[in-house]
Image (spheres, rainbow, N blue to C red):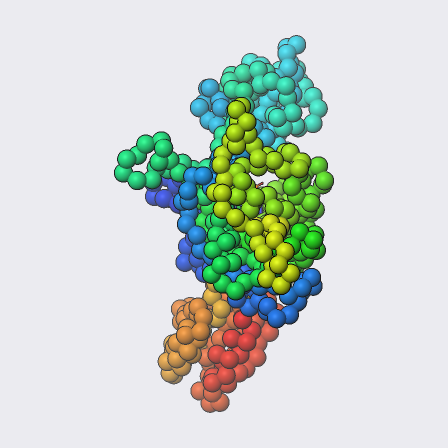
Length: 535
Ligand code: ATP
């Protein structure tokens, strides 16, 4: 599937719009349209239901090591600035960036890629942030210009070696920046903190500076004790949260994949250190299965365990659930969710102060005078087991998912083009969004075959009855085949048609979006029939 087709469908049918589009848009921000909001809400609702509300705490289901409890939270986006100092985000949540002095553009260091070009006894590294294989002609054109070569001298230019990332070079002096005409306009790489800064209160001084949260997880850690003290929840248990997070990404791109404002669905699962390895395996497999159950069933989804050298000292395991998005080069995958064994790193940081993630065993980071660099809360965030009376700092397993990336993956997976016979038996191409019925934005559409003989009235009654249960759509305009195709394109799993036979025997046809199978059901049974299929 070509990504442009999906992007265009998303705009045309109201799944996604560029934010502030009438003012030219703002890079890295997206609005969900009337259908997009339903799709994303369904994904978040499915996650919350499957992970929290429908969770059975009396049984160890889905291969869990033991029974466990699940509960939720909804924390603020702006938190005490000390949260981000102790979590490490204030010092460490950075990307390296380079600036172009000619165009004033800024790039993520690792995303600038290029190849060495040679001519006239000189070598320059010609770069781009686009897909390098597709840019070959453009790279040659820019290299020729930089060497001041005419078209007829094209054979003087030679390319040397494979495409590599700019961060593999020793310095940036012989580099032709992605949008520049002159060589050597890129600055050396510098660190750029990804947190959005804001001022809290009317005084507006730097001391009042706070940050928009770059992840929802910290709200859960700092409320760990509140949850334990206010409920009868016992370890092992998980706290879930869905909410907005903000990252000032240097180069937002690939549609909603890398946005500056996005939503996360995170669980912090607290357990005893002796069982944390088992819980890690449980969450890794459970979360992978969740995407498969909702329709990401094919080869495009993969579970990738991090290599030991990718892990932080405090983590004994991290795995990513990844999807082969169509905008990525063949064979590359993009992260949908990370599942990390975080040990006691987070709770200890909020007790003792910022821990050095590179020291083993973990130690509080200290300044030149040997004092803790950032003081922790000083609160006791340990846990006392009510049965054994053992006191310990719980270990944490963190399945951290992005609601927007999941939505994008479900959109990509659903997009299908096929050919189906129309009423006259002629083959017609159609675009069909094959969403799992649970996440489809509209569950059923109701059509009167013709606008007479009382058919619209019956169809409207069915529509109203369905509407009480879930989003439904009524359409009486145009040939019924066209109406079917309009619903296929937005992924409505069932279309209900009131026809001549309805008037005699009180039945309607139901058509399945994927199999095109049609069957008749009594009007009184329609709501139950559709409800059973979409829940
Ligand atoms: P990446 O390496 O792609 O930047 P990450 O490893 O920094 O992602 P995490 O910090 O683990 O991501 O965040 C957890 C989840 O939040 C990711 O798996 C992703 O689904 C989502 N997420 C993170 N950054 C963004 C973003 N800029 N836009 C949309 N979703 C995001």
